[in-house]
Image (cartoon, rainbow, N blue to C red):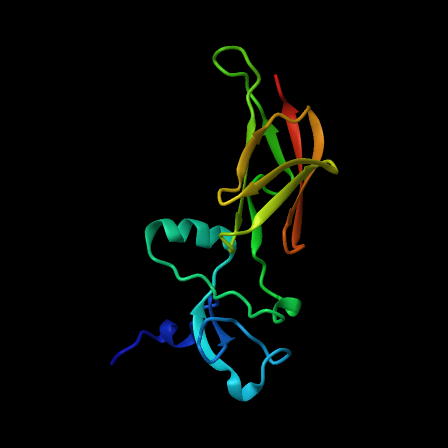
Length: 166
């Protein structure tokens, strides 16, 4: 088989990861919670939560198996991410056709379909979401900080600025 010279120096796919599963292949495990001889290695296509959210709309994408009870203490892969707003976004909120103030639709993704996300704007709890993690809000003009915390304690914070809400 012939391969073009640049093809010989390409990098390996960064999304294929080696993970370790329990012997029944139902749970993710690691050496801190499972004996080495009881772990089954597997190659898995692992992409960030936002990419997985969109990817699952097009093709069947098997999510990572959940961690076995007692094995999630050293989780290194992020399971929570914000689709909107991005860090330091500048947001303009126009009026609706009827003259009412519009809303910003905040949207997040979580790799665990059963996860609950708690939303805080400027340190004040504003919403709790499950399954579909989006909701509308009309923040005042100025700088804001949005913090999301999932039921497992993982959190993410983004700053954004509202240019107008009129």
